[in-house]
Amino acid sequence: MNPFRCGARAAELVDAALAALAQAACWVGSLDSSGAHSALGYRTSHRFLELEAGCGPDLARTVVRVSRFCERHPLTGEHLASGAIGFDRVDVWARVVDSRLDGHYTEHEAELLERAEAARDVKAVSDLARRWRARVAPEVAAEDCAAAFEHRQLYLRHDLFGGVSGTFSLDAVGGTIVADALDTQPDPTTGPIEARSAAQRRADALVDLAAGTTDTTDDREPTGEPAGQRAEPTPGDPNPDTPAGAGRPTGRRTTSLTLDALIDIATLEDRPGLDLDALRAEIGAGHPISQPIIEQLICDASFRRVLVDGPSQILDVGTATPLIPTALRRAIQIRDRHCQFAGCDITWNHCDIHHIVPRSQHGPTNPDNLVLLCRRHHTQTHQTAWTLTRLSDGRIATIPPDSETPDGTHWALTPDNTWTQIHPPPAPGDQAERSPRGHAVASATR
Image (cartoon, rainbow, N blue to C red; front, side, top):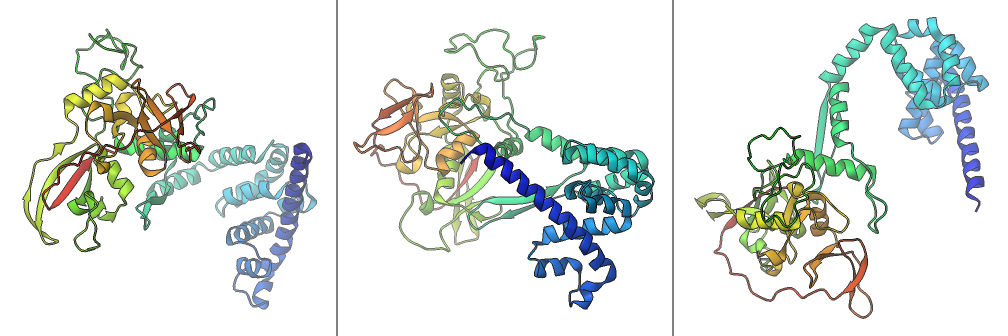
C-alpha cells in the first residue's frame, strides 16, 4: 500500500468526521435547547447521544458542549455550520469561554473567529484563547489560578500485583516544575536496544526524583571550579576521566531514600509450604510483593534481624547491617564508573549495586559477582527476562530475552553494543548458610 496515498485518505476521513461532528453539534443544539431529549425519554442530551448514537461519554459531552456554546454565540454557530471553522477549533473556545466570559467573547467574536480560522493548527488556537482570556479578564484568570491551587491533588492506587498507578492535577507553577523535572532527552537510537517511549522516560525520571538520588561526592575543600568537575585526578584512579557531576566514589549509598520491606526467612529462602499466616513478603504499608521484587530488594540492602513470637509480638530487633560493606561498594564504584548495562552511561552516583548471580541462587557478595546498574536497568534486570554475565576478560555482557540459539549458546551485547555468542556460566552451587528462624527487614535503597 502506498503510504502517501494511505496518509492522504486518512486525512480526508478525519476531515469528514470533524465536518460530521460540526453538523451533529448544530442539530444537538436544537434538541438540547428545546428539551426534545426529555420528550424522547432521556434525562440529558448527553445520555441521548450515548444510547441513540452510540457515542462514548467523552465524545457526547464534547458535542453537547460545542452545541451549547454555539447556541449562546450564534455567529460562531453560523461559521461552524458553513464549515468556515472546524469543530475542534470551536471546542477550544467552548472550553475556554464560560458564563463569566460570554460578554467579552461576544464583543470580540468576529475578530477571534477570523484569527482562529487562520491559525495553523488547534494548538495555535489554544494559545490564542489562553492569551485572550488572561488579557480581557485578569480577575477571572486570578480566580482560576486560586481554584487550580486549591484543587491540587494526586491519587495513587495499588493494584493486586504491587504496581502503582495514579492521576494528579497541579497549578500552573507546580505543574511546570514537575514537567521540567520529568523532561528527558530521547534515548540514543544507534544501539540495538529499543529506545524507551516518552512516557517510560518520564516514569523513570519520576522514580529517580522520588528516590532523592544525590551526588555523593568526596568532601574536599572548595576549589572555585564549577560544581561536579574534578580539580585533580585521584591517585591510583583506573579511569581519571570521570564524567562531570559524578565526583569521586566514596562507597556511600547514592540516595536519601530508605525503603522498608518485611520478608519472612522462609520466604527469603524459598522454603516449601503455604502457610499464608506465617509467610510475609511486604513492602511499604503492607503491600505484598513477588519473588523478583524480593530479589531486587535484597540485592543491595541493609538487613536487621527481627525475632517474633507469632504474627504480632516482637521479641528482639537487631542493628541494621548493610549487605555490601562501604569499602567493597567504593571499589565497585571506582572499577565500573557507570551503569554496566549495554549502551548505558549513567554515572556511579546514580547507580545501585547488582548481584549478577542472585543471592537467592547463592550468588556471592564479591567483586566478581557485583556490578553497577542504574536504577532503571537494575529494575529491568530483576523484573524482566534480561540478564547479565561477566565475560572471561572481565567485561559485562547483557543477555536479552529469548536469546538462546539451537546449539545452547546465547546472543549477548558487549559494552560496545556489538553482538556476540556466549556460554552463560552456571550458577554457583555453594550452599548459603541457613539463617535462624524469624523475620528479616530489608531496608533497601531504591
